[in-house]
Image 1 (spheres, rainbow, N blue to C red):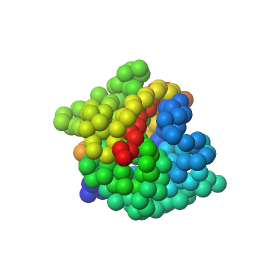
Image 2: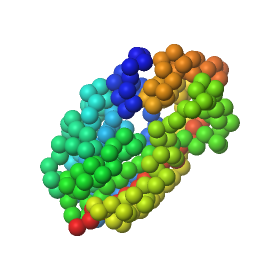
Image 3: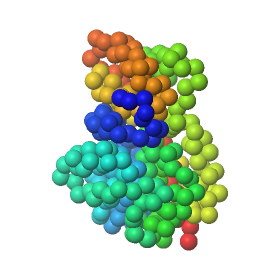
Length: 260
């Protein structure tokens, strides 16, 4: 992988992202659906910054009336389309700031593990435009709770030995998530801000666990190719001989209603 990779550019990482990144909490998903003004079968849904469609497919499986996945990266979008299976999902090129969606065309718009890449003011203005009256915008993340597993704590701590000033763009427990409730309430475009979180445990094979690390963009950019490969070697050594790795995830979601 080239050192020229840019922050937020997942080109070349899409296959690992699609195959190895974890699902989100189904309980949180059901809670978010419960906040909608209409039954899910009447909801026109858009997932922006959809990546390879992990969250998109979860919502589709709940029975949404129509689903559009908006993703700017060609590699991520093509892998998402290939992984649709029998699900009816329309894929289009677009970004949070310019979705390509028609005005007042969707009832629910989400960004899963991607809103931290967006320009907050431009994106929320765009979401207000494409949402119908009383439609909802949801931003969610799926960080690991590494503190419940000492092995994962040791692996994460090794990053600081490779670069002392390492900074995660968003783990879902830092960055924009620290102020998002206040930002959404202060926005002229949204009100009725609701926060939901839920834990879920995923038992991963060593291959999947390594694949999830390979799909991480911000660390690869900060460390550079050589140091990042060294980190992957460290992880592989630590999990060698294990049949499974148990990882606990905390799905965190902010849902806000469109202001009139």
